[in-house]
Every structure is written in C-alpha cells, then in structure tokens.
Length: 73
Image (tube, rainbow, N blue to C red):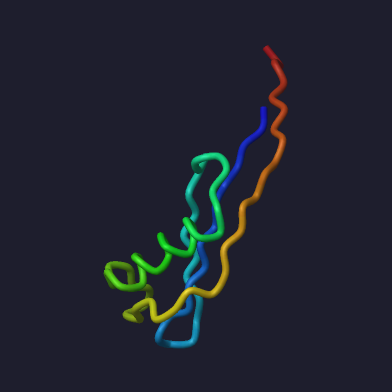
C-alpha cells in the first residue's frame, strides 16, 4: 500500500519552525496550490507553538512511502 503525507513547514516569530502534516493529500497538487494554501495559513494567523505565531512560509514537501502489512495471525 502506498501512503503519502504533505508537510508544510513554516517559520515562527521566535525563529523556530512549525511543521503541519496532511495525510493522503489530493493527488497532482501544484506548487501554486500549495503556496496559496500556505499563504492563507500565514495570513489567518490561527496556529501557534510556544506562544509564537507563524510569520512566513519556509518549505513544503510530499513524502511517499510504501507500507507492507503482514498477516501474522
């Protein structure tokens, strides 16, 4: 089984980063779609970590992996 995770990485006001992970994102996402979604998150200012708000987009990546489950019973 193939699984994928979209990681959205943001810069916080305290110089740390915040990573939001989205499991099984829509297929065929474009750079523009991801950038737009991230910009909305920055502008809405709804996420914080350790009291620091998101101030900028830093990176985004799609991670794909294959998972094989074994029937051991």
